[in-house]
Length: 345
Image 1 (cartoon, helix red, strand yellow):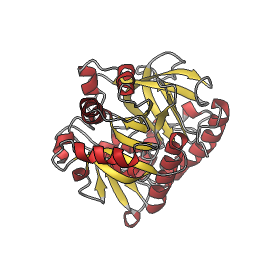
Image 2 (image 1 turned 90 degrees about the horizontal axis):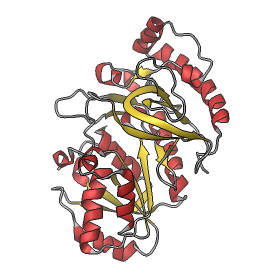
Image 3 (image 1 turned 180 degrees about the vertical axis):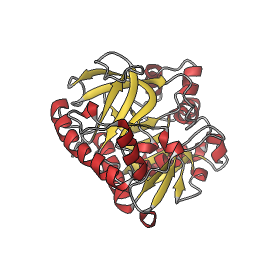
Image 4 (image 1 turned 45 degrees about the vertical axis):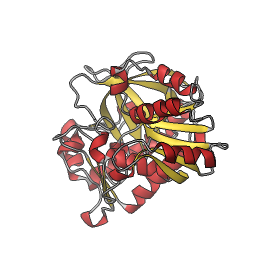
């Protein structure tokens, strides 16, 4: 069942009700969040854009959780540059299960209901600590649930295992298979390797995210990325935008490419970085991400440090807003998701 079904008006009606309830839930259970709301003079919102947001950076400075310590099931940590503070996200069993379920429903919109044979464009070495994951580890582990007969494209030293890839394609390449990896790793360790060794990825469905910085340095735009992947047969390509602070919620690229879409339980608001007012369609600003999934911590309405723009509403592959991420706010700390991948080995 698709999670891309609601028109923007229908979605906002549902989200306003659910998120207003979540605001009260977290206000009662998370003391720092309650103090922030009190200091801001919070009044109940009459629109989704009017809901109180937290800057995503707060999760680096405060322990924000709405569950008692003995109910903490998993602690996730954000990626960051060396020496930087990391975000800490606290999950209980129920919220961890729900984010896995909703992530599954989102990716099944492009994969179908069956688990497919899967190539992970990464190294198994970064899954060292099963209780405390980095953003990259959480992303890889989360997505691995939707595949079977996994093969890792990189060995424990971070080098490409061409024979493992060749063996996988010989066994499973004649039918649909799933590929997941961070964007830069896919470019360097899958596209270039497939081109060099004549690997046919024609039945692959690629889901990828993050790490555009090095590609921009190499003058590789998202359009060029898709165009080049098509030369090795890979035409089913879906970028997504997501973050550890809203684990389980991803904004997925539609079949046509070029735009990200919000699932029924999530949305984005683009804000003017000076006035904080909501920007109209076509005008860039800071991305606010909204999701009903965070129940164990107050991550339901977050102002990111990313710039984006809404291109249209109810006029694309799926209903609702379609948008693009334009990059980081100048001077914002680099996330470093895939640019530090060799440290994992």
